[in-house]
Length: 427
Image (cartoon, rainbow, N blue to C red):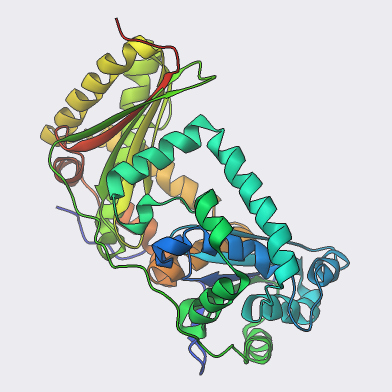
């Protein structure tokens, strides 16, 4: 069982919901001269209708192409002349747009960011030009074996759930999209109830709220938009297996995956992070020590747990010679069975806890790191949940970790994707 502990550190930010429904997360950091403003929108690839696959990421590009009142390039000029920087990213659960500027420049630059995000013009000529950029990004991804392997594995794990589709979409569907399709998607999803704005840095709360109320007061009227079908990501029994033979691949890849607890089970999610660390983080972790250091069966091995709104994802990935794939997969399954049967020793569990809690501490030092942390949790869960992470990690015991391994990392029920060199043929 997980021991219930009280968080040692109170959530240092404040959360406000404005009259229009926009959530604002603010943390005053008086010692820093910079401010990060980060707009998070629940409008990632997970809400795309299948026929519009790729539109959320494409829209991320088009947001920077101006509005009726802001010509293309004016935003970049306004930010860069202040010595600032900006960028954006899209995932299945979110899209977000962020900038870093000096604290005194926020009042002059936040209106530009708000104008772009709320009122993206999506001009037809820019749409056609930027589609070439997006298609080239997709083609480069299709030339990356690790990306291909991950996408094949995701489709295998999630099947008809939106998580099984690429955030980048497909060339055929991207070519069918129109500027009007994108405007409908934008106006349907870029609404205040779907947004979290994080502002962290050297600006006080009262000044921040006054500025935000002014800049984010005029949202577009929502329009009807096709919705994705609500397809649950369901567990399965047995082993789902696929092998891809890829050109120019020198080493084989072994990818093993399991679905995991979502945001409604954060205690278990933190336990899955511990399992990931125990198995394959650092030279003294179980699989790295045995498979890479002692047996030398793999060039490298890693693991990860990705917390998502619906079904999260636990992965193990090894880089190895093709003739070792079967041996490595069998050994991993055996070690997963062991970790589910025997409680993890206290010293080994304490090491993993230190690694995760130290990583958390190191990732909460700058305004940009905090804005990313609060925005992510504010989008998939609640902002304050981010600061419960160390406490939830520390609450786990050897027995609770064994229970999680039995429940989520079955050596009999998983998905495996193997990438092999094109000319490899097993003896």
